[in-house]
Image 1: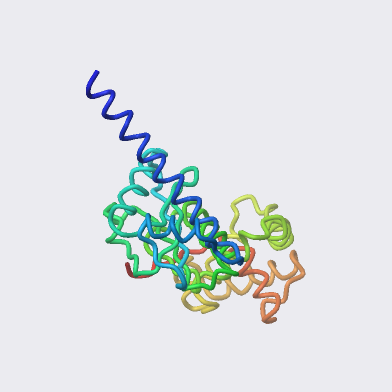
Image 2: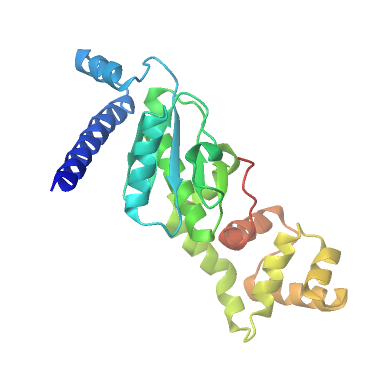
Length: 249
């Protein structure tokens, strides 16, 4: 009974701590003057005001929600006071460096982080790092991800309907190929940075065979693989299938 009472009281304190943290976090993301109550809460939490804050989002793939809640509490205790849970994700703002090692979760974690941002832009910046973290979860990307290095992925996550339409426009006609050779060839070509020699080697086919496949792709899709605009459409359509490298933590 003593143990249960202690755990219940501890959970209540953690919940209250997170509730107050979330309240200040939300106030800092609104471009309006802070009042005395905000200043008092910031002082109580140990959060310096009149700073630029960098938004961040953390995902622990395959881990239950309580793991994220524990991480948020640990970050708050470690000095990253503006860390709260958001479903199966941890989000927050930081005024000091935050790296993958600071999470204490090993390499199997995703840390999406933005640049120091004025308060008037924080709400949008918070959404962007959350979208980036969700993208990383979906495609299996791990490590520290700087938002500025993944603007294309954030853009696509913001417009999933348009991204799906573009993907359908580029790839729909290639689905008639029973073995998926043409779509796979196109993905490998982009992955090899349009280097046809490297693409042939990766596919284990002759350059003439590659040239034939690319011609078929152009005939079926109406794309011109020599056009920068059409190549940009192909890259965007395939962006979720291309290998990515995490940034060093």
